[in-house]
Picture 1 (tube, chains in turn purple, brown):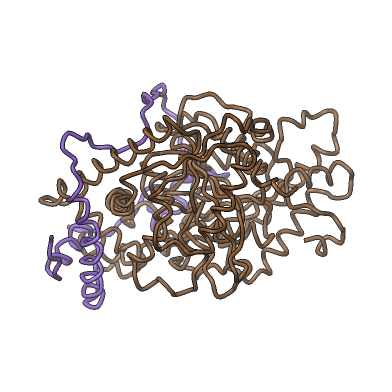
Picture 2 (cartoon, rainbow over the protein chains, first blue to last red):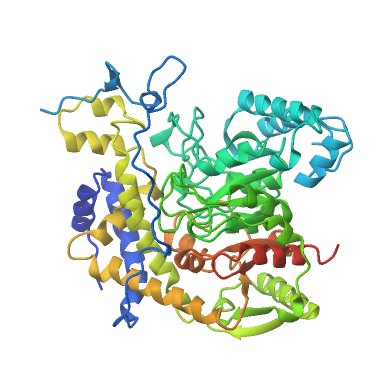
Length: 99
Length: 490
């Protein structure tokens, strides 16, 4: 059975690009330990020769024609995708400089 | 509602409303105005956004179509003028869509979910977007960033989640019907807690285009209605292949309403009763109501067959590995670049990792907990022991159902071990909350259709739901069985 400690929680937190407060790390560590203890029951199931089921959909994937479609625009001709952008510049997404 | 529009008209269902339209007792605009007024004054916190202008415009179109009776084929508009609520996990072009998260507080999508577009094309009026657990993660609707939804009849209880806003809105008469989404029971559980009908269709039956993803191999949209017949009406309009969703089935549409309304041939119906669903932890009054329902089926001539679904006890563990793993991947898209919240503090850093962390601080606790758990399950060194093993046990759960459906036509069980619990009762213990979904989760893992139909009340008058499960793509027969049960005392 895995032992969840705060170091493991912080490592996963980094992988997930999440920042937790010290209090959240403590709380989550205890909760994750409880949840993983519960999930550990799966180790008792005999899965020898059992295939993974990642999806319940067993029909063949129907393919569409590869056709270029114009992006939707608003009444003034602006791309609708930019309407909810946190910041825009010259018709594109503006992001903070990271270099 | 009758008082608001000043008419004594019974109009809980699509059929009753259409009768009132046809007799000239009611107009779509008056109906829409009445519902908007009631919903906006409601204290339930069931709606997050109202589409007042859009709704009234749609109602006016419906009014014009009715005025041109005879010139317009009414059968093309089976939901003409019917006011609906839409769970805020489904996009509508130009309407704020939040997923009840601070992350999407001001997000206005540029496209409409296919299921919503089909409802609108059938003449429906969209009143607004209903509250929910953040990103559909929760079973009580206490995880909304915009406050919990109240139970429609018991203010100290939860309405169930994650589609709690839709369930409360339908039961409290804030809309005629609504859409929810069901990843592990999020349509059926709140339907059961609030005393309405909620159906999760077969995976692939309804398009997921425009359904903001939580766990892509489990998510399905479902109707939440006052009656089984109305569930069939909404479902029939939404069903059918959508080229915009690669997991949308190519099966042709069926006349689900007609099938729903037929009388079952009871002598040919076998209903499986799984031993594993009637165990300790099941509230006595829930068990009593469900057993009484089973006796009714038997009294009609159906045969009850004891069955076993031996891997049921592992379903919650499997689900919370599969769902959180898919969620951690799906929610990685919220990076504050193209849409979603970007706090000013995030823009002050020159470090990309810090930028992301500050943006993603907008997630609520339950969402963060599931992202952390999912990231752990997919991380190097743990993938085989957790995610892969869960997917193997998922296959065994599906095989349990395959085996059972060789001998029975349907499976019946409770929707939930208890009736609606108190606000705050389980919110500090995530595992306790997760176990509430123990009877609904296996259905999502196997991709099957199932629904909740009211079957009684406990001693405090809290509703109890009967859970009926069918083989894949047998929604017509499922609706027929549920409709017959619903009409048992009529």
